[in-house]
Image (cartoon, rainbow, N blue to C red):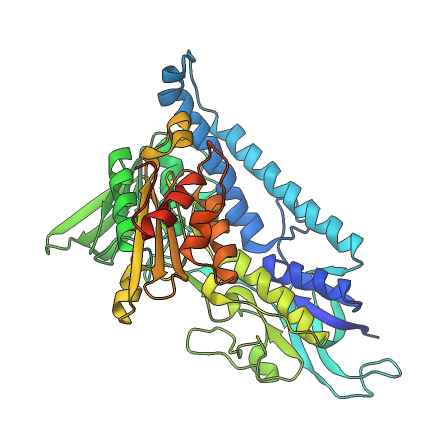
Length: 482
């Protein structure tokens, strides 16, 4: 006899577990199915983000930053460090502990909100007409296999996330050719590390191992660096990475990749057409991600997928099947954990008859390198492309007192505002704590604020946020400290 639920969520990542919790808060009987396993074979809620993405990468970035500060920057503060050594095993152990804390935190939240959890792969079995399903009074819905269990849900939310895209002809072995998963489990600092792709994962993982002593080379197929980022901000970031020792080659065409006992050999052609070979100990491939619908049995129930394998949804995350929704990386839009969370909340509220809402124009983006890169809204090149009349204002962190005290004055804040109305159209930051500073811009844009609004708000002194105020002032060419 199948257990019945008002809402069944397939996937326990940021989109899934948040959708399950919000649906439970709204009074629904909710189940969540997730198959992630920890090293002991137990449940590991949180999806890619918690297990092999956002959380562990930030833990390693923090550890590697501490190591670099101790080795290169403590002396200028009058702090002497003798006999500095690196224990990669302990670093990985701490990373795993941080992940476990997050896994257990989600388990606690499920218990608190009375969400039933089933550990295993979730997949569609069939649509269930009203009156069927093994129990009297069934209102129908969908039969879902949850590991060895059979469930029936009136409403189903698919939140199965995404998988790393492999390089054709060079599948991941997670020993020499690494996805984001393997990149987080390297047991010793490689002498030479190669990366294919200079996106978020490539830059973050390259930064981790560069700080720890690896010689890092990044091969990027596009002719421009960080093409989605505001061009001025991307150039500033590239200068910082070059200075740090990250070797980034743009416009390359990768050829044959060979993996052997001594490492990996990558044949490629430079932007100038020169044939080159890169020999490395490890290779991280970060050329994007693909929606994960493996084992979902979408075809069995007629769930529509697009040419990329993503689930087709409308603006409200409804699929072509009545009562079936999809959120996060498995649908259109940016593959960001916080985007998935917002969609999960919105769908739960729509099921309850409320008006859930996600504003794609104010979803922030962050790259957690050093300097950090964060932005929201349109870039200057996008504004030019659509012929928009705009004003721009920038302010460098080198003129910010708190940044000087921190010893980190790289980068700037950049404001873009409508030339006629002064409404903020985009904010772009490269520099210290950009990931935290961008939130002020997101709030401002949600409320349709002008650059003058930010310029008139009192910001604490000394703080990095003063650079935001000054950049807003710069839109009207009246900065006070530069």
